Image (cartoon, rainbow, N blue to C red):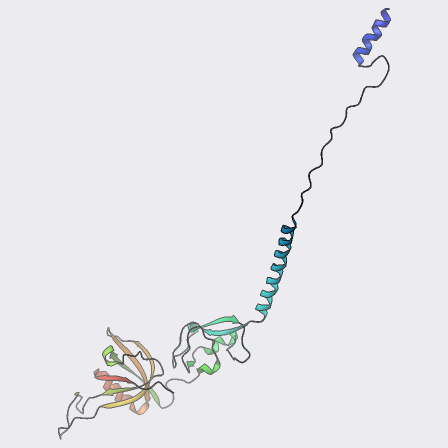
Length: 239
């Protein structure tokens, strides 16, 4: 009797039943699979279209760059007859018409110091025919500076290359309006010339008009211009 009770206590302590069956196993937890994301066809199509568009734009940009050339353009307006400086020019990359003959980018430096044979507006492509290597003054010519005020010039703004006349009414004694022995007024004296450049004068309100004259008339014009009693007349700009 005592032995049977001891065996019962042993079964209780060890967790075993008297039948000798093994203990029940615990069931593992079941984890539900993650939900699958469904891609919308519209978004997928938009993504593909964006990739294709980007590729096409890259091809277009490459083709556009491959069709352009580096040429010389006019950065600042240059009037006919003016000397071209490096600051007047710039290199641009554009598609060039085969019928045009612009100066290539590597020819920019050779254009510096040339003179504009016609007006060169800002933004135009520079061609070799638009420049001339003529040195001013040339052989047998001189440049004379004539300082005048606004009242002694035409209202139309003078430009390099303009054909003008410098007119003086000085008499033989250097006095304007003096008369000869016969008491007859002397005819105004004039010198036909061409404008080379215009620059501010030393005196406020004056402009020095540099003009091109034959060498044998330079002294005469300089002498008359020094008196300040001259006027400038602008002749036709038609060529």
